[in-house]
Length: 552
Image (cartoon, rainbow, N blue to C red; front, top):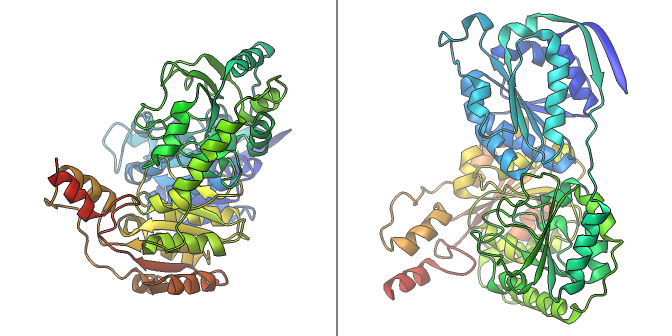
């Protein structure tokens, strides 16, 4: 479908491109270099501009919106300072394969190369961490290049695109703008590819699937389930892709992340055939690139050819969309002989991930309460930090599109991403989990959520330290604590200063009461969970780490 518009301003042409993409929200910190674009958004009722408190928070909101909605996240900022502030969101979108389009106002064309006010060569600055960058210098090319940006962001392995727009370009008109639909190619495997997979599985005794974000982006979760059930193949989730397969399914065998229990790692190590679908087999997923061995037959399926063979040489490499690949693989002729092994590995997973009836610490009690009381369609986002270990180990993600987390490990991500997810799905409960260190990095966006009446629920695990770094510090430099202790902050009281609800809890009953109350609130809620600083991770306390160090 094509639309031709004549004598249109640059700003309005960009807005037409956003409308064609079905974008509902645009995130920004306002800047004088792109005021005409903000003014054009003012006139468009289908677009809502969300003005954040920091460009980093705005970029995390856009990234969370994109993960939840499946549409590209759009974020605006001004010149070098705004661009530098939102770079963390661009990096997160690149590592997480999230479609994002960033519009950056640039200095006036006549001032370029003179070290103009806040001047940075933006397309070169972002080139290493973006999928594509461009500075548009000719108004007539705006429709062409903006639509190309959305195409690049969405196709193949999705990612962020950065567009630099000189300030003066907004004061020009376009004689003729052609706006078209951006089609996303869905490559399918060939018949020969499918036969190669069939030959490997016919010889296999212990196959396993590692499913990544490419399955989610292709909306192939149901096909993955059908494939696993038809051939009785156990499925492990790649790092922070928990909801790619129902965790309560008899064929789910765990999450390959940080601190993964040994029985789950052992499942993949025992496998003689590994089908990696839509995963780049990252450092964390592969446990520092030590998970797979040359003795295993790797079938690697990804929409991006650059991913295939980048970490491990595959026996079979398929450049294909996850949904197209799985639909073809459902046609192969294989009789599974590994059902007993799959059932045994499921039991190992259950033993490693089942919460004890008697909770050993407050963190376990919080996860148990979330499991019991959150509705099935709730969305959970999380920040970086050891607190997430309890979520990753014990929470059962039973529905698709239930989890949003940064594989980049960015601190400060959880709460702004929850804002973006809530705007994508306003009818669903959205909960973010953060540590006190990460939450403080972007907590000013709580005011943004309050101002726009976005009732997210933020759970803050407060142990007054940078816990993950402290854990490594205690392992390698025991009793030599420096830089990881934090001051005592009342996040519940700070929340009230931001026109949000704030509750401090110290028991499971208090937490459950606050959680249930937050479901019906019309403004954001912060639940501050006072945790034991000694309980540094799921597997160890600080005291235990020090004893290990002393025994070396």
